[in-house]
Length: 267
Image 1 (cartoon, rainbow, N blue to C red):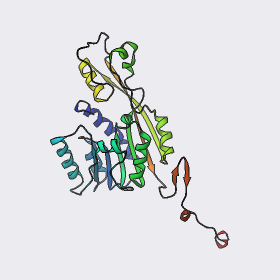
Image 2: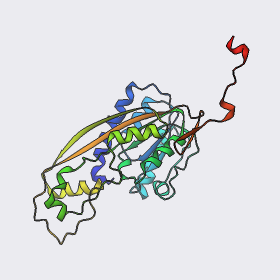
Image 3: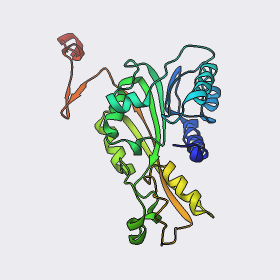
Image 4: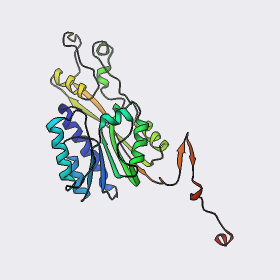
């Protein structure tokens, strides 16, 4: 995301975290992936005193802004050391640079729609979460910016398809397939109204819905005055991590985990 859409990230993060009000969870370590300046970190600090932040700053945050973000997260963590994860490294290697079973909560805001392999992302979240940990996330669904898909506009605008055009049912199935427990999915449509074509196009680019536009090719079709965002929310638990390993959709249980029933046990 870019600065122009920061307010939207903050709003979606606030709506996500409000949903945690009814969740009973003890959190000592949280991974923000991606992390960005906003009200979500202070909210989490208040909700979970003594929290330590592991931050995956957005790739667009550089220089002094990155230094400010890292300093803020160190302050949020009460000066306790915490990891800084590179999103660029994750995109290259497919690995979140944290040990297995190291965090209690993963918070991901408007990120999954930009991933070509969201199932692998879920696998990595499962790996880094501790037993009983929680993954909570939001992302843009396939009906986002449907106003830009008219035949005339698709011929003139460099529209991009979402890397992961999953609806909430696809995500719910994927969570179960990656052994997450009790997934809860929700969805809402948000309407963004515009008086300026330039601002609409800027937001569409910030949301990665458009490639850069050739300014020498003026549009001959009127742009809409509204963009609809399909925002999908979800959370799921990492439970029973010690019970089985999954490979090729088959669960393998360690022999040491199988109890032997004796005659005295059945008496």
